Image (cartoon, rainbow, N blue to C red; front, side, top):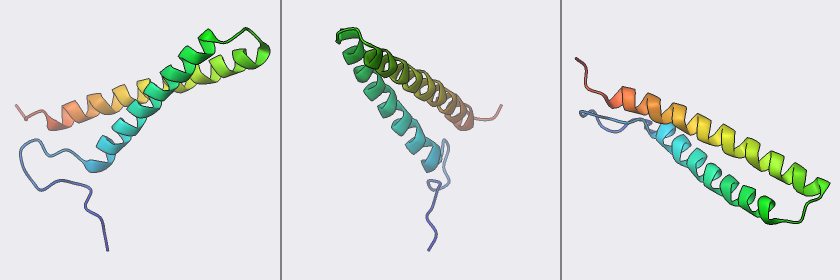
Length: 81
């Protein structure tokens, strides 16, 4: 049994997989921002520095990839000229 990755043919059909990836990456970015905020509020130590660095990497990567997917989805749903 195959899963359908596209909505039925209509103007502005958006693929399911990129949409799901976008929302997963957005959630990861939000959780990363929360972790980053907690790391900034913690007492300074080497462990907190590593926590901060890892949280910052997660935030930058997830938001960057989500932005790329959002741009691709916007171009995909744009009507042809």
